[in-house]
Image (cartoon, rainbow, N blue to C red; front, top):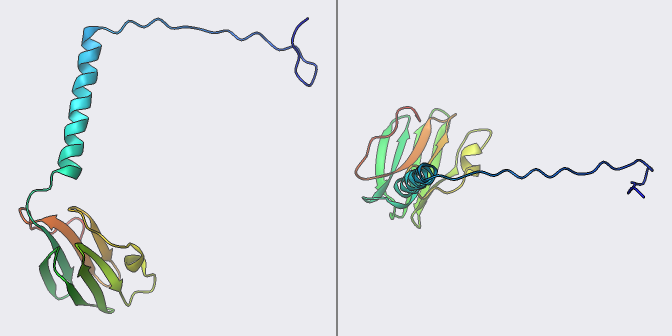
Amino acid sequence: MQPTDSRNNKLKPVIIITLKIKIKLFDILIILIAAVVTGFSIYTAYIKQSGNPQVFLQGHEGHWIYQIDAEETVAIKGPLGNTIVRISGKCAWVESSPCDNQNCVASGKISMSGQWAACLPNNVILVINNSGNNNVDSIAW
């Protein structure tokens, strides 16, 4: 007797296909090279952070540089008013801003090199970068 489903239709037999793939030495070499390149990329992007991280603040009237371990509250004047940036506990964040949408406040704390936060309506940006590279990225601005 054939197996049936709940609708009394005959079930078709399942065909199992096995693929026989031969892995050659060259395949293993390519996989190892890809793993090494991936590991090196992760190491240089996230783990290796030489230098002393600094917070770069830029606003309507200028720019300022603070060490990430500073305890500062900075009022940065913009076209809409003052944006308040806090630097504390090796983190920086926008505490308050006069913009309507408050996305800059909701973006939260930044602490690693390469992270940034911005209040675009008020022309304020903060970037964390290592001291070896102290140029604020003009594309981000």
